[in-house]
Amino acid sequence: MSNCQDFHDDFELYALGVLDTDDQAKIDAHLRTGCTTCHAALKDALAVNAMLMSMAPEVVPPARLKRRVLAGVGVQRMSWSWLAALAASAMLLVALWLSVQERSRAAELAQARHTLIQVSAQRDRLLQALSFLNDPSTLPVSFGKGQPAPPRGNVFVHSKLGVLLIVSNLPPAQSGKTYEMWVIPKGGAPRPAGLFQSGGDSTAMHILSGPVDLSTLGAVAVTLEPEAGSAAPTTTPIIVAPVAGL
Image 1 (cartoon, rainbow, N blue to C red):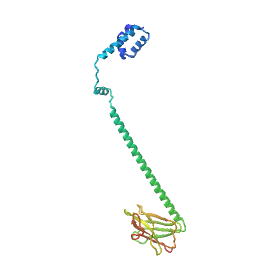
Image 2: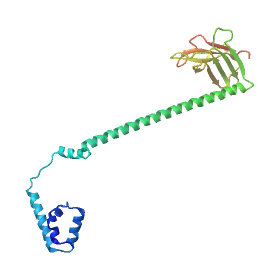
Image 3: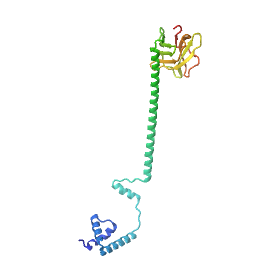
Image 4: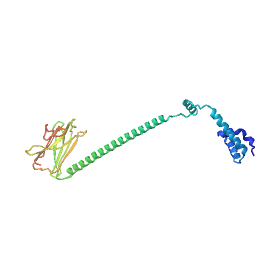
């Protein structure tokens, strides 16, 4: 069993809480025995420590000292203002990234919708064209034969389905212009029958849907017009397909 004298020189360190774990445990165990001598020695040690600490001048170490100590063990001190600025910058970057991603997704969705609409419209037009071509009542009229590099193709007319124009060798209309189809009654003025454009391969297809009075229809024509179209032809027809007498 430990003698009180064994602890005498350790009470100051014990009071400061800097003893080794094993030595501190030994003194704890001894003090729990109720030893009055050691309790008195501990009180004396606490008093001495308090007196010494009161006599020492209060000195605030410079901030650079703490930074040097932390740097010496590989820890870089970061101030709260620096951390706040870093957090704000990170949040801004995240917000910008999310904004760019959202705009990108919106643009992709818009493009997908546009493509789907185009594909659907093309499918519907092709189905319409097939209806014309498969119906035995459809009457075809060719145009452009015998001319030097003219637009060539066919006009298909149907009393119930309308008029189908399929043309090749028709260059795309220049900027601000478009092609306009006309139905021309016998002895009457041309009537607008819709606007269309030629593709990059110089081919085009245009459909005028609805019943057509074949007994009064004299011709189908195409002119180059302003982009918004015209109420009456303003240029010489590029295509004229006579359908009278079919």
